Length: 435
Image (cartoon, rainbow, N blue to C red):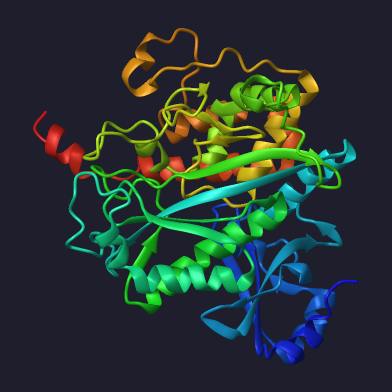
C-alpha cells in the first residue's frame, strides 16, 4: 500500500510538501503544497506548464501534472515541517516520455523484464564558495595539494556535520566525509542502493547541500570546472547488477578476472562502446569539457579521464575496477542529471549484455603519463558540440532511451551550444582584438 501522505503529515508533523521533479537541464522544480491539500495532490498531481520548466514543449501544450511518489518522502532535516517528494510527470493521461525520472524508470523496468536490477552509488564532489560566487569561501585553504587536509575540513565542520547528520537521520548510511583535491572542495559518501532510490537521493543531496550552505552564508556549487587551475567536480558512480530480488550480485565472480563476472565485462563493454555518445548525459554542459580535457591542475592531476579505457585499481582510467563485484565509472561530473545519468548507464550496459560486447584489454598503465602510447582507444568528446553529434549518431542508444526524450535532449543541448557560441569571451578580446 502506498503511503497516505495526509496521514503521514499528521503523524510526522509535516505542514507543507514540496512536490518536485528534475527537468532536462538537471534543475529541480517544485510546488509548495500545504498539508491540508496533499490528499488531492496525491490523487491528481500538481499542475505545471511544461514549456516553463525546461522541457521541449510550447505554451500551447496542456497542463502537465507531477504525481508525487509517496515512497520517496523525505522530511527536510533543516526544516522538518516540510516534506520533499519526487514526482513523475503526466500529460493527457500518459507519462511524459522526456521526463528524466520517467526515462530512468523505463530503463529499470526493461532490466527487470530480464530479471536484472542495477544498484549504484554516487560520489558527489562540490565546492563551498563565497556567496557571490567569486572564489572559494575559505581564504586559508591554499595548499597546492589540499586533499584530505584536516584543518581545511574542520574549518567547514559546521556545514559538513549538518549535512552528514541529516543523511544519518534519513537512514542513508553516510560513512565518510573529506576535503577533496581542489581548494574549497568536499565529498560526502553514503551507501549505494537501487538505481531509482540512489537517483532520488542524489537529487535531494544536491538540494540539501546548497540549502545548508546558504544557511551558513555560503554557496555550494557542483559545477564541473568552476576554477580553471583547480580540480573539477566529478560524480563517480560505483555500479553493480543484481538478480531481480536484489539478493545476488551478478557482477561478482571469485574466479573471474579481478573478481568480475562475464556479465560484468559485457556490461562494461556496453559502456566502452557507447561512452562518446553517453558523454552528452554524463557531461552535459559547455563547462563539462573544461574538466575532462583539462591540463594538469595545481595539485598535479585532473583526476578526470579523456580517453575511453579501463584498468584495475587505477584512477587514471575512465573505468576503475577497485574491488570484486563492481566497477567505478569516473566519467560523469557534478552537472550530470541524477536520473538521466543512471538511465544512460543502464541503457548502455544492458546493450553490452544483449550484444555480448567485449570491453577489450585492460590497460595497467598511468594514462596521464603514458596515454599517448595507447593505440586504438576512443577519445572522449572535446566539447559539447562533439558530444551532441556523438549522441545524435548513436541510433541504438537513442532508441533504447526513447526517441522523444532523445530528440528533446538534443534540441535543448544544441540550443545551449548555440547560446554559448553567441557569447564573446575575454580570451577572444585579449588574443584577437588586434588581428
